[in-house]
Figure 1 (cartoon, rainbow over the protein chains, first blue to last red):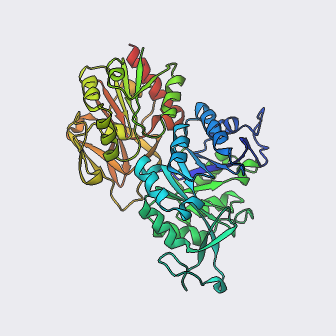
Figure 2: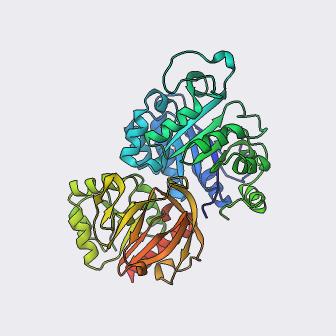
Figure 3: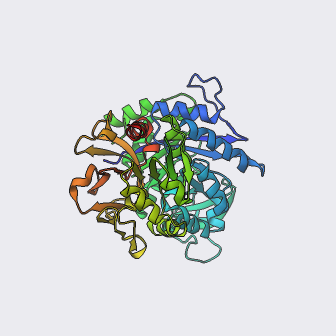
Length: 267
Length: 203
């Protein structure tokens, strides 16, 4: 059976992994390749690298990071952050990534998803969606087929959560599937960073709406939260940062926990 | 030992190169017919659509070279789309002729399940084969695909995976070995396949 996936997410700034990484005895905990290898040994099913560098030369830095990681690590690798053109996608894939994740660029230029999928295949186009619960007073603005309406529960945000778009998350999810996305990485901005659990309602609604895999993100604080995302949220994979980086739980422990509860995972 | 990886601008070749280096081989990467025909062993990787891949192979005049290489009996490994392309035709893109090395077709995965079939799934090995040495049946491998191959001769199916249907995840015929999953993305079990392929090519 297809296993549910556990995916650690690493933030990379100027070629270095940031956020506390206290659990593994590494010579250099900020080295992406070394950390990726440690997660691989622990049983991570995939890795996501998110480039949070603000500067314009970050592309080249990220490419060299991906090249180094792919020398050591033989599990799937997704790279996101600042990818804007088909050529950006090509370079990242050539460097050794298997998938790219696009967020703001997909909203600004939906054709990017279509062109990337056409050129490199649906399986390598991940669309990341940052979702925030709609407060009724916000429902207004441009009318188009993706716009928020009276039934909308979540709005799409871009630019790292700074900009609202007036786009309905569920409609956008269906749209990116149509454009050729192979997977959706769905982050709840309301839950992210709080470690109180994923937004189950959001994850389930989107997962049932689309026929491509959905990765739940934002809010994991304990192992039961991972279980809930799979069992109640119908997620195909879970992304988590804090609970693994800070050494609260190991991937192996998470897998034992899920396995004992009947979730199909790779051991 | 010259192992050539066919380069037709199809996604992540670097992981295939690194997996071979792990198996102590420095591969040649080329999109030229003469480099393919002069290889001791050939690897056809591939992601993306069968339609686009066949176009690229035709443009680079590689169709004849790959067929000729396989007919020569030297070791050949196809990965993911590199398995599907061996068939006679694919349903992808409204029906496209493929390499026609193996009798059979390529069909879309059933829609009751999420497509692409993405992630780690088990491969049940139907019979012993030297390229699967050291790998137990039902081990997990990494998949990322929307179409699957249906060889006309069921005896060519070495490994089967279940996703709504049971499909051919490893095909073997004489010198041809091909997987629907990505061994270069399947951790240590996948690297074992590369080692075995290299060992077999050397022997």
